[in-house]
Amino acid sequence: MKTIRDHYRIARGQALIDKPDQGRAMECVAAHAASSHFLRVGDFCRFADWRFVHRARLNLVPLNGSSSWRTGDRRCRRCGNNIENLAHVVNHCMRYTSLYMARHNSLVARLKKAAAGKKGTTTLIIDATVPFDNRIKAFEEAAAEKRAKYEDLRKEIANDHPGEVTGFPFIVGSLGSWDPTNDVLVRQLCSRSYAKLLWKLCVSEVIGYSRDAFTEHISGVRARHG
Image (cartoon, rainbow, N blue to C red):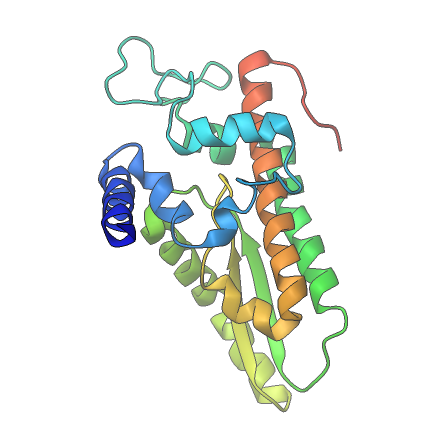
């Protein structure tokens, strides 16, 4: 019975991931358990964030260009961009640059705290980034871009300092998807128990900032200051 139940559960999940529209974010979410850590008890997740993130991950949000079947004016209501979709609102609309920066800085602060006690000769070049959850390929492209960006610096440091020098992109999707490749870095920074806490904090904080950008976009009222 369990095998049959698991078979249908996996099939339903794969059917959702395969959907050309609603499956884009869910492919990223399904890649790591950290992305859904709040489902049972809501750790570090505001109820407002909970209500937002499930609709957002399924692209069920009231935006002019959120779905290909919508008709009428698809432009951004705030900046006039050609398409007002969720990726534009939570990643690209210049109106919310301060929120995007605060979201990025929250990840940096978490990484700094996790790495505070690290010792040794290994040098880590870490750059956090928050791409939109548009299938795993988007995370892979963001990681490749970060590695290429810091390759010259990595070589320069390696020539001048003993020990291994490694560049690590740190990626959390703007809808709270944790990139599985982050685990390689996190294992070098902190204990397993703290790593689980780091997952939760990073995922929940990113969702919170993205929700605030979305809410401000819809309502016109600033959702978060500072």
